[in-house]
Length: 95
Image 1 (cartoon, rainbow, N blue to C red):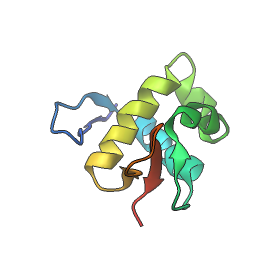
Image 2 (tube, one colour; image 1 turned 45 degrees about the vertical axis):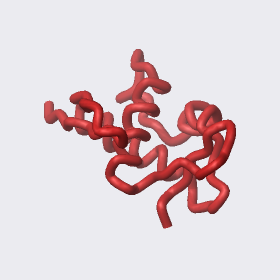
Image 3 (cartoon, rainbow, N blue to C red; image 1 turned 90 degrees about the horizontal axis):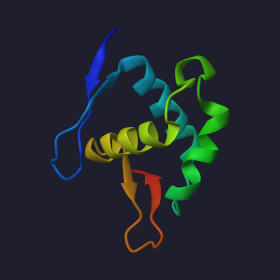
Image 4 (cartoon, one colour; image 1 turned 90 degrees about the vertical axis):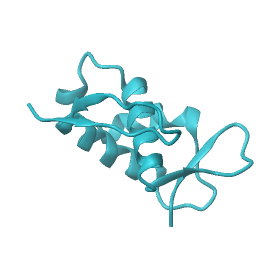
């Protein structure tokens, strides 16, 4: 089992998660967020992910926890960003 150390946009210490779980969550997040400039409300992400995640990989796991962890990693890597000034928080792809 290969593990990946995630990053945090504020420089905090990341966590190690299984690579297969990370890859599946990343793919699901990018599909759920799409390419719109206005982004997606963060609170809606866990519900939007359900149709894109592998049932086998996420059975018994907290989808919300992995969603937050991978979202923060993708922010740190410059793939996703929070929409400036949006309240509540909205997330979009960096174009």
